[in-house]
Structures are given as C-alpha cells and as structure tokens.
Amino acid sequence: MSDEHGGGPPGLDLGQLMNTAKQMAGKLAASQEELARITVEGSAGGGLVVAEANGRGELLDLRIDPAAAEEQDLDLLRDLILAAVNQALARARETAQQKTRELTGGLPIQIPGLTS
Image 1 (cartoon, rainbow, N blue to C red):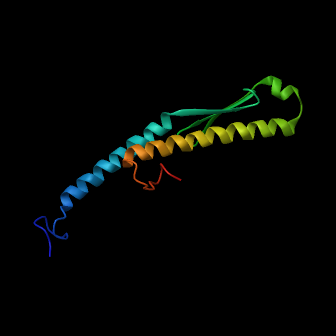
Image 2: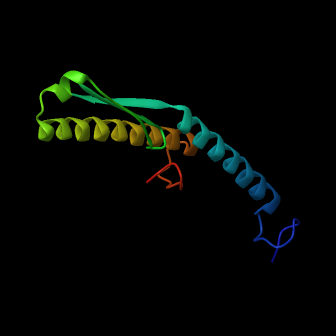
C-alpha cells in the first residue's frame, strides 16, 4: 500500500519528509559554520600558556608567555602546553555538543561534523 504521494507507507508524506531532511541539512551546515566562528580558550600556569580553538575542535593559536620559556624547564612547559590545549579542545567539544542539542531539540542523535 502507498499513500497519495506515491511510494511510502500509509500516512507517510514523503514530500514532507524530504522537506524536513533539507531543512535539517541547512541547519547542520549553518551550525558547522557557526562552530567554525566560535572560539574558546584554555589556559595553564596562571595564563603562561593559552590555547585557542574553534568550535570544530581545531587549534587556532597557542600563546606562550616568554617568562614560561625563561624557566628552561621544558618538561614543565610541555605539560602547560598540553593542559592548555586539552582544556581548549574540551571546551570546543562542549560547545559542539550544546549546538547539537539545540539542533536536535535535545534528542540523543549523533550528527557527523557536530558530534564525535
């Protein structure tokens, strides 16, 4: 059996389903563009190292205060860099998850490009 719109189960409007899918694709593209523009920061060592990432989880900038390099403790500097980058990337993931919740109305749906 098919509905009057041809091909689908009774009560299913394939035209409406396609329109909804197109709207979701448009919202997804807009969300991905918005995530690329959103920036978040992570820092360590009281601001000696600051990492900046976008909502897509891409590292954009890494600032190291010259005072951190003067210490000549490369292991400590490495740890500060890792901490700052990890904090920035965690904030980027949180931002992407929030955008996904907004897009899906809170439904637990995995969307490639927005969720990991």
